[in-house]
Length: 107
Image 1 (cartoon, one colour):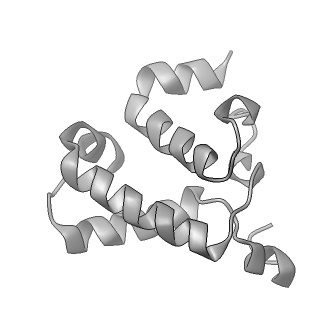
Image 2 (cartoon, one colour; image 1 turned 45 degrees about the horizontal axis):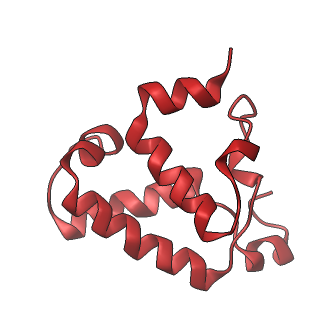
């Protein structure tokens, strides 16, 4: 089964977010094997890039109801709640940042 195509078809907003994550680190979503449970370790990013992505995702979720409905358990259009959801996203699916790698965390 091609999980990459499956995710693109069944979770289009999630796919867009992961694709944007890849773009921010000059990576390609096609290089991610979603059959691997640790797919998020394919790339890494700097803290600055992670912060830019965080701002982007907060804004994206705030302005796109389809994304909120797909990604958030409770799709409230509330910045404080969205920030919390983005924090959970980063904990679960964010690329490790370079400081985490240096310290041996998240690997």
